[in-house]
Image 1: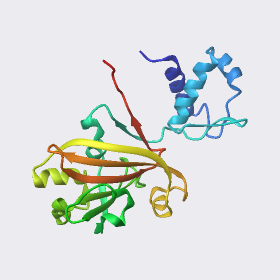
Image 2: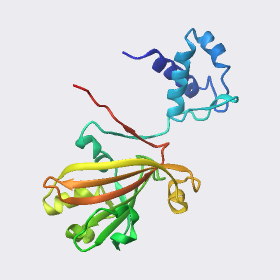
Image 3: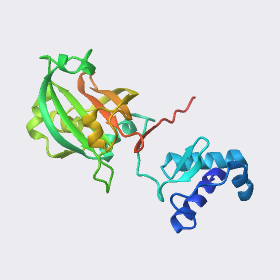
Length: 238
């Protein structure tokens, strides 16, 4: 059953896409507009929040609510209900490989506490884009421990994921994922790739992927444009 606020948000979007409402139009004050629609102010706020989440509206304090786009922005949603969903980014989008090199643990601060047999890692850098878009929504640096560094000559220009290449070529499989996410300021180099301003807030996810026997397969350090990526968690308490 569709919630009332969802129906209201769809009705507003339909009016925008049909031309009844135009990009740049501002809505009346919430109390007035809610009365015009015959709904509560809280329902209208939920509808506005949903449309702002997908990039159609922009709400500013004291400036009101304005239409800024006529269609929702494409966004990749990563569900975290289980390991299969957690790995969906590496299954449902393609990694465009932009370069490889060998680095030492000491060269990459975020590798501190992770072990590679020789103290050296294969770094695989790349980007991911949404279907139909050329501008990446993600910049990824994957660090492969020495025992799997032999995948380097086997990597193509595009891959679903580095861990998949390891699985296919070494006959292992991912059995555990540990990851942490935080907001950071975007570096100038990655801002240029993502089409953002240097220093803009971005989401960084650092993930360790382990084999079923507990051995480390890779460390992934990924930066995401928060307007085009979200993480969804759905946990049932028994």
